[in-house]
Image (cartoon, rainbow, N blue to C red; front, side, top):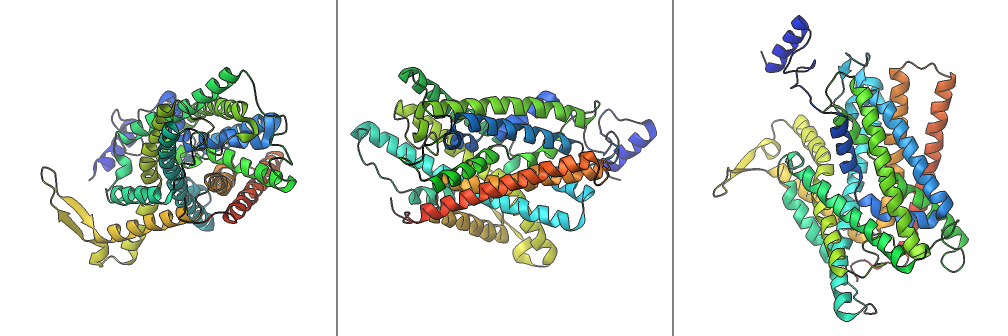
Amino acid sequence: MTMADKAHQVFEVYGESKCFDDDGRIKRTGSVWTASAHIITAVIGSGVLSLAWATAQLGWVAGPTVLLLFSFVTYYTSALLSDCYRTGDPVTGKRNYTYMDAVRANLGGFQVKICGVIQYANLFGVAIGYTIAASISMVAVNRSNCFHKQGHQAACNVSSTPYMIMFGVMEIIFSQIPDFDQISWLSIVAAVMSFTYSTIGLGLGVAQVAETGKIEGSLTGISIGAEVTEMQKIWRSFQALGAIAFAYSYSLILVEIQDTLKSPPAEAKTMKRATLISVAVTTVFYMLCGCFGYAAFGDQSPGNLLTGFGFYNPYWLLDIANVAIVVHLVGAYQVYCQPLFAFVEKTATQWYPDSKIITKEIDVPIPGFKPFKLNLFRLVWRTIFVIITTVISMLMPFFNDVVGILGAFGFWPLTVYFPVEMYIVQKRITKWSGRWICLQILSGACLVISIAAAAGSFAGVVSDLKVYRPFQS
């Protein structure tokens, strides 16, 4: 009999165990504050760097308004999702440990497969986005030092291709480490790095406004004529929606975070409070970064606040920020890709259980450490995966376009559609009732926004490909 079985027996006989929860797992200890901290550190990342550009496309009226609307929708649908952590009874129902578990328990069948395809495609896209973001930050460090030595008018053209290859080699090495995402100190380092570069970006924007004493920008955003055509203005505005959506796309991790919470009170109640706190903090931070960046540079707001060289000095501070971005993304790449790696390897094992190439592990001796267990299939498949994401990044290294596509592709299905549909099933909401209609209107409106954001982002890719020459500086 396993420890979990014994715990179940104890729970059935005595009602509650001091060491185990009702599912036989070790007693959870998470609180509203730990959950809030997990959400905030997971959310505030590279997406914040494009918010000044997004605000510049929309202007002083629409920019902050859209940010607030996205924050409200994200909070509301996250609250719906928190009610789906347990199937059936909100206090004693069966727990769902992951987002996919919740979809499987509430919707089942074909919708689980659709969710899986979207989730894994999104993770693949994030790997490409992180490769682009890391490489342009490496380029920015090189250019920053060049500008410092040769002056701001120097060409300082640097190709991102060698840096993408360098990043890819690092990811190939780290991808061979089993359960890399479970390393205890990784989340701490990621949190420190993301807050470092986000705070530096905000601080430089505030300093720029304070130095010039002038607030740039206009009510309607970037001007038609001098900067962009009327059609480009429309596409860029749509693309800005995708950039903002990307900054708020974190629903996939919410169920896992909720699974760390102690009860009573009911996990859903605690999670709703944690979501409210974290969305409020995140929105304030996003508002500050987006608005101060726009106030500092107006129509000239760079696509990436720390690599577009709206700032030149202090150059060493820019270097620190961009190094922090690279360190954060090296780890974040692995954290996001591990579920995809695990899915492919588990599927391969199920299909070919007798294949030694897939199942056999070779002990590689390392002096002073335990032997490293090398799996040939893991080595080949993960290496090919990293190479593919790196090559795609080289062919279209457009940070804002890729961020917009990722935001558009992931926001509606993962943040809105599935939480709404699961909530309807969980609460047994009658079809065509007032509440059902309101939820469907919300979902439909977000679908339209996602389609518009995707169209704008793909238009941006097409426009950039007309002038881009791969593998050149």
